[in-house]
Length: 451
Image 1: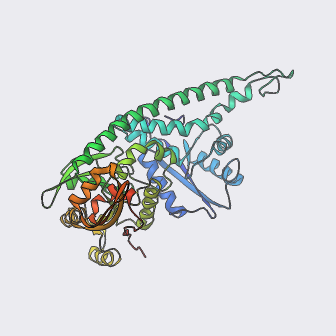
Image 2 (image 1 turned 60 degrees about the vertical axis):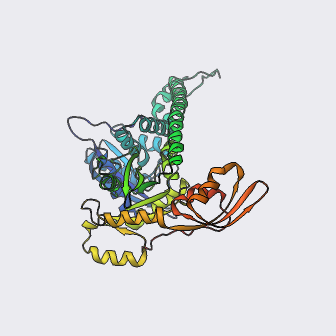
């Protein structure tokens, strides 16, 4: 856990004051006010009480304190007035910013950034061994470059009459702050090494499981989407399972896989994955690499979108950007617009959706509306929809050659010196098996038009 971890007490919730900053020419899918609203939801998920907020628009961040001097004075006064315990910035602060803000705002409040807040929420919701290991790794990697500001008071005490490291005579003495800092950094690096080793062991087990799953040729569908879009509720409805569901951000963290029987008695595996969010910390993307591989290995993605959310378009784009970041944007996708029961005019919404994205589905996982049609649509995409695919497969991949013959329709076949060229059509669910051997022709993707 980071030294800034949120501490919930039995007496009262910690009080949080929020600070939003908009940087000119810095791309953002959400407006400043919308992003602050999302930060408030994150803080609520972490068990904090929001006591106020402020914002500032800047040409660029200030080098030492991110926000301007006048705004810092305003934040300090408001934090004191509202009895805030913590000030949370809706961005990721580098070590210099964190130190500068901590010095200016004083010891009465702690300073957190959006990344630290998300890491704390993940720590609260990680239930499996793998999840806990991944969160701890992300926390340590976030904490390591930020350690120095925590020992600033000791650095000022150490080393000679000047209060700096080194003596008047030029002998290189080390102050207690620097010594403790080096010890802490060494311990954290050691722990990071151990965690990576443990995660690799778990990852190898997961890989072996995926290999067995591929051999069984049972289609895998991964549910992806913005946090709180309703993925877990949908998985419960499809599989008659009891995955934990709550109306909050990141209610479920660890991936859950369930068996689902589609129309025609087709067996499939559905995997619920961690929800995405704008400004998803890079430490989490890296630490959860093995978990996110579940998405990359899927035959089909169900992109679950909260149709009732006023920022549905921005959330959709945020998920697409994250999928591209983890190189999963080439997997076939069905867009599923959830929470139709919360729409004022579901029929009109369905008509607009049918015009903009005819292959999408409008459903309510809570009431069950549209679930049967979604199941049929998934079945057709996996078992009936045929996609043109021309590939050059090496002879060493004999099982793939056999798979194309068994499951696809071969229009052209030619033996080469070290490989075969096959042209024809295959079921859409098998695209990922052949993708790396595909010749230039590409498979078109479907994306909704929110305009």
